[in-house]
Each structure stands twice: as C-alpha cells, then as structure tokens.
Image (cartoon, rainbow, N blue to C red; front, top):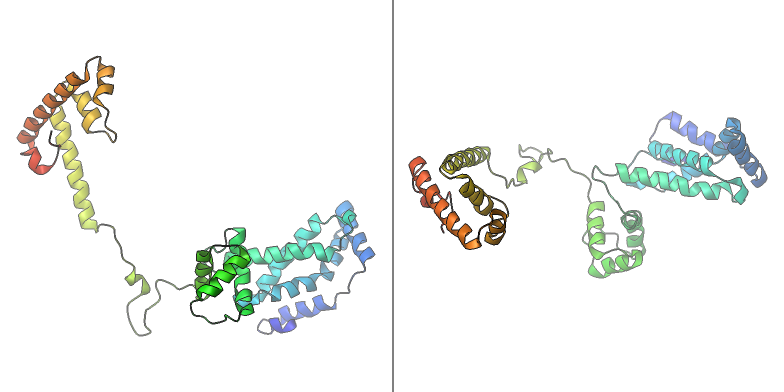
Length: 295
C-alpha cells in the first residue's frame, strides 16, 4: 500500500509506515476503548482506537486513487469518516468497530471524489452515485474497456443491472471518458482561437438591444400621451381590454361598470377611434406603426 504514496513526500510515506505498524486490537479491548470514549470522552482511548484502524483508511483510499485525486487528500477524507464512526459507534451492539467504520470511511471518501473529480457536480442522486462508482467495474466485467461509444447491448445491460435509465448510462460514460476542459484553452497549440469562440450567442447584439429598449420606451410614451385624450371610463376599458397581459372580457367589464357588454364594446370602439386620432397627431398613422391593433 505504501507504493501508492511513492510520488508524494517523505512525510506521507512515513505516515503510512507508522499506520501499518500500529498493533491490531482484540475485540474486547476494542470495545473497552469505544466505551471509554463514548462514556468518559477519554481522548487517549479515541487516539488508540483510530490509530489502530488507520490502515483501514489507507486501504479504502487506494481503491479510489484512479480518479486522479491526491492520495493524501483521500486519506484525509477517510480520516474524517473514521472520526465520524468513532463518534457514533455504539459498543452495546457488539459489532466490530472496523465493520461499522468501513461504511463511514467509504462514504466520506466517495463524497470527496464526487465534489472534486470535476468542477461540474456529478452524481446528485443515489442512483447516479452508484453509476459513477460502478460503471468502470461493470464495463470491465463485460470486457468493454474501450474509450469509444458503448454498444447498445452493453449500455442496456448496465442500465438493467444498476436500475438506471439508458440515457444516464450513456451520459456518465461520456463524462468519465473525458476530463474537464477550459473554455479559454487554445483549440490548436500555435493558434489564437479558443474553445469558447465556438459557443454561439443567440442573444441580441448590444446595439440591437439598445435600439429595442429605446423604441419600446418611446412607444410607451406615445401611448401614454394618447391616453390623455380619453375620459376615465374609456381609459379603464382600454387598459383592461388592450394593455393588460390577460384581456378582461366584455361581460366582466360590464358587470364591473354596471352596463351591458354591448355598451362596453361601443365605448371601446369609440375610445380606439380617439386613440388613433391622437396617435396620428403624435407620430403618424398607428396602423402603419403597429402601435394599436385593428378592430
């Protein structure tokens, strides 16, 4: 196991050697240490208990080193899981601490891998997490170790085996086959172009956006001036019928104003005529400019 640290510093290798030399614990002594920590908060007991199972942390961390993350970080996260296990372990259940701690250590390391393997969060559900950590193993099991696109048969087999949709298997296989790439990275070694240059921007260019906002503001001002030619009831009907996101029905306005819906229609028609005349004085023919609808 120490070979996993060969690329790290002497301190890391010394840590592994020390961990591997820690004596194994007898079951009864292990339970006594756990009780002393749980009932008396004996830090010496906690230290002896966790030191004895540091080798378990290192062993578990080596299983995840192929994800490209520093081994020292994996061990550190495993230590966090080991301490969580020590805090929650119940000696009265008469279960070996190593059995209980394994789950916490693995869970802590897996969470670290998911958070740091890519800048894009991977595996947000339990099914996706299972797919992330088991896809390579299952592909090797069916001798599908290539970096190319998986066959439909292999994809369907993994989908059924893990109980996840086929599209999730295809998406995860694609993500695991390629690492993160900076949008500012050059497309070719000696070129000036960057990958972000290939991303299309469908939004309006700044000049068009400014013109659109200015024209919209001007139209609102014109209509506001034209509405001054209407009386209060006409203004209310035009606002409710023509200038609201959801037009109010003639019947509803008739009930509100205490008149028939036919009378509301007549008032609306008269008000639109007044608006047209007002807009002609301000900007010209409203039908040509599209400021108000035809009736």
